Length: 600
Ligand code: OXD
Ligand code: MN
Image 1 (cartoon, rainbow, N blue to C red):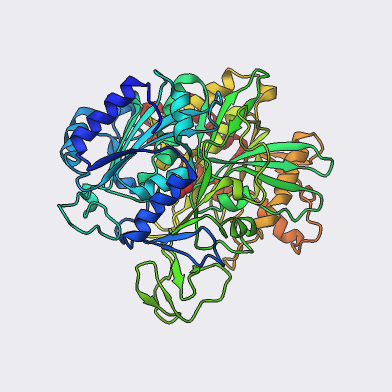
Image 2: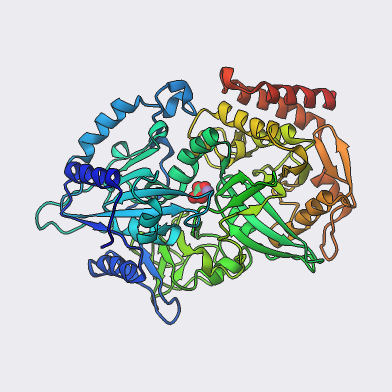
């Protein structure tokens, strides 16, 4: 064990120990041996399966409880001191009241278990943009996933010193064991109402209870790097965003860095690792989910990927959608909730690999192609080290970050929104970010299938504070910066459909054609026409060489239909009402100006 000189941290660990009453405490050192031991504990207990070492060396499969398969947005709370500082009244609970409730759940909740203390750094240790957290968890699954997703262990304790700042992250699966009781395959609190994913923004603290899955439990990701970091970013003048970061090299060898905000299930990981179809262009990856951006001395915005691994959705990942991820998850990867084939490999829907005649599905049951059930859960995940990505950029861990030239925003819209739209200026770009969203495709969220769910900057599930204040912060970032050095914001939509309900744009690697146009615009050569909604490529501006796309299709992709925009403006006005008095005036003005320009 290493020496911990941080008195306050030691006191907090003691306090949690006294409350949760674990059998033992383990301070994670972050070594490879420790990682293997933690995996082995679960394998020995029959809770995890090593995969065939010839096919997937270093890979393991875990199956979660069917009630614990995704982030629980309706059990996610922002306990700011004042209700109006929370993203919405629905997610707010008075902090002391919430703590009192949760303390009752935490009392004795780790009995029979080991309490892991996981010091972690979001971002390269020592970077001026990085931040430190300490997660206390009673789940070894969380501990070894955190080892992949963040930088953990002794080096972080060193960086923290005797009085460094850190975010306190407390997690329990909420399933204490009685003396001699055998553990469940996936311990978690039995009922959804017993689960809490709570944030105390003013105290920079997270309390999570009852779930062992993904963003509910790996607290460095959504809870810290988005919800708490967004509050830190607001207070300190930077940006913590739900964005990929990619590096684009043009045929002249010039490098450009681009961030992109897309809601879940819009192909963010695929775009981050894209294989360009345009000759001479190269894409490399810096990050696939989160970007932290701070101004450098030169006045430009520099981004780091605060994570060290990718926690990606498995179903749909194939050699067509993401060949690089397919290679990346061949080794040293944790799979959760996919099918297990008879030869010890994994299989999932949309893999492009033929379905085996038999496997064990994500629920642990026999499965055949005729079962009529999914072999892999729709939100099955891989956890895989970023450094294994075949196209990871060499500078992905540069402590200084990378200077951002463009920011993409976009959702899934089958009508109305063109393939790409360049903002007129920063405020207009923030306006475009505020109106992005996707059509609701599943009745699981509400009954309003087809209606647009606005998801400003893809942050709807991840706001850590009032959403109007969040947009105001974006406007303030622009106000205080040198406009010529700010990234340009582009609104993209890969998902427009034709009258036959078919996607018009081929997507995936072909999205490089749109990236190329964006870079041409930034360097002053790309052709665009000013329109009422922003600057759109002219009909011949996007390189379509080698692509079977008709002029009519292109016209459709860039069409601005007045009736659709009339309905769009009404729908934006409805959404803007949900901001109440905290809607930034500059955005209301942008909407009015657009309406005027459209002359509806
Ligand atoms: C994710 C998400 O898991 O955005 O990255 O839901
Ligand atoms: Mn995400």
